[in-house]
Length: 209
Ligand SMILES: O=P(O)(O)OC[C@H]1O[C@H](OP(=O)(O)OP(=O)(O)O)[C@H](O)[C@@H]1O
Ligand SMILES: O=c1cc[nH]c(=O)[nH]1
Ligand SMILES: [Mg+2]
Image (cartoon, rainbow, N blue to C red; front, side, top):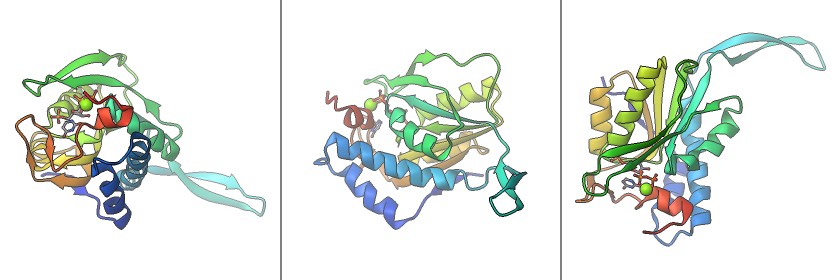
């Protein structure tokens, strides 16, 4: 069964306007991606496992709940880097494991160029970060790599996904939870999301091509 959640929230709708608008400058674009990532992050972590921990406040002893899982953030280079800092604000003790992929411009197939995952040490929960989920090819490759590594649970956070992309991930990885701010209807001839926001990596890093 597909586990795709489109988060509905007025702040998400508001900040989506900023990232979609072609007039938005890179600094504003980065800030909007930051805010959207935090909003997605809150939802994508709402059922993480916690355990009781004893505490002493200035008044008395009490018991709180702390995270009981090792979390790894997995940004897909480059664009996923724009989501790391906001997620670290929510999860300051998370490890960050980078994976580098780019899409071949002719085929739209992902090409791997950076992978330094160790043989062991896989986190319990991996949060895959990439603002765009278009054909789903890049996320597909990353999910397979994380499964091979031995990650127990994989969640994907994207700002904008295409319908075809979320359908693909839901079909091929029914155990993977996907959290998105928007699901757009189509892809164009170059496999860009429509209406989308253009090339997220180029807009974050101000590298128009
Ligand atoms: O779902 P898919 O069809 O695989 O497309 C999505 C991928 O394409 C973009 O990366 P891009 O290749 O532009 O690399 P970049 O982050 O370096 O710009 C985006 O950030 C995703 O990683
Ligand atoms: O629409 C798209 C598709 C892939 N990558 C992007 O950055 N945008
Ligand atoms: Mg790009």
